[in-house]
Amino acid sequence: MTSAAQLYRALEHDRIRDPNRITGALFHEIGSPIPGSARRADALWVPFGVRSGEIEGFEIKVSKADLMRELADPTKAEWAAFCTRWWLLVPIELAEDAADADLPVGWGVMTPPVRKGGRAMHVVKPAATVTPTGDPAVAWAKLLRHRLWAQHDRDVQQDYDRKAFERRQRSLEEAEKRLQDQLGRQRTPAHEAALDSLSAALEQRLGTFWWNRPRAGVSFDDVAEAVADLQTARRATETLTQRGSAEVDNLRWMAERIAGILAAADDRAASRAHQ
Image 1: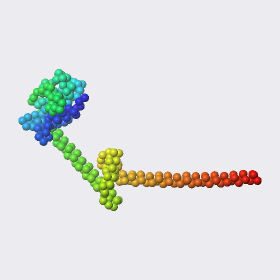
Image 2: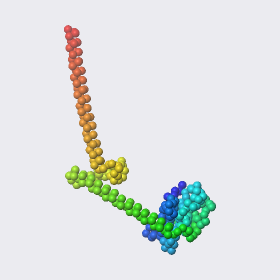
Image 3: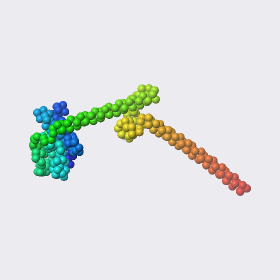
Image 4: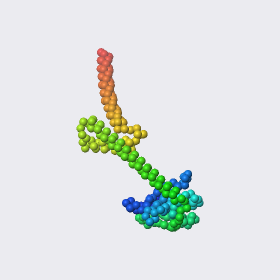
């Protein structure tokens, strides 16, 4: 079954063919321009150039039941009043159902490319170009706010990633300095290989970027302390094992001595009895 994400990616692949040649702006999951409404459009395409000023809207439907619910109440598509074209974007297997349905006037039907390896979306039923009944100023203000907030979110994420990278670098530099202080010499290729193996083992157990998760409660000092505790425990185990082995040897020797003494006593007793 084709997913909504796959349909959106097909649309994106069609409309943004060359990232270096911008022909328009594609918006994903954008809220309604009507104040107080929680509805949203699945996708909007704003072309540049000769068609500048137009807005195409897309409602993505992946099942027949979903399609019928949408057509039962077309007013849910609040962005349609602000668009010059409005499309139902459906999987290829729903194309016939969508085209034969009682569509609102002007709505079109589009599917992903029907040709394997194709890029252009397939128009099942063309959407009419209409004059929006909604206030264009409200629509463009909503698009501008959405784009500004999206840029803000990207800036925040980039800043977070940069700081996380810097924290990781500092942690690695501190760990390297501590290791060099302990070894009293520069790291050799063998040390590099050992650190790579240790890092891989820790990431496998604790996950990638485990050093950058405060909630995980694991630091380089914790790892060093755990290794030291493990070594101490192993030494203690070896000591106890050696001591236990020595005690067993002592008991065996004592048992043999006692057995010898008892055997000698039995011999003396037998000798007296014969006399």
